[in-house]
Amino acid sequence: FPTGSAPYSVGIADFDNDNQLDIVVTYSETDNIVILLGDGNGMFTIRATYSTGTRSQPSTVAVGDFDNNKNLDIAIANSGTNSILLLYGSGNGFFENKTSYALGYGYHPYSIAIKDLNQDNWMDIVIACSGTNHVETLIKMCYYH
Image 1 (cartoon, one colour):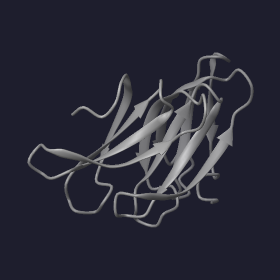
Image 2: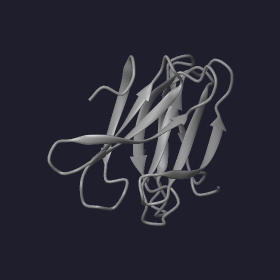
Image 3: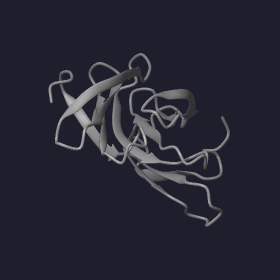
Image 4: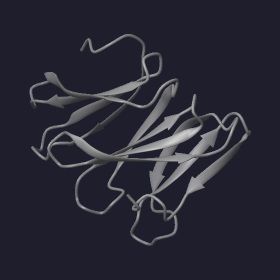
């Protein structure tokens, strides 16, 4: 599925609530992500492209419902800007709102995972930061937008 040069990471979920799997792809060289909607027959069409910020270098993408509204959201580790970007889904394949969390200079987040770590019914984010040689967490922050 040609969508751009140098795809870096993918996530699979149903972003438009049609019971068909869709794909999100990060492009580290062009600082954006692309949403591809699936038709259920193995074909995908580009729904939208979103900038992740100048020189953000998005690496890993993860999918979860961060605001508990039953629509899937996307978390992106931006290694170039040392931040985590959350895009909040509207349930139709588009993402209307976003929140960025700065981690600090030199963190370089490269990998993220989503799970409710403290069992409060809100998704939390675990981040592997290659620049600091440790793991960070965003707990009880993801639903403020």
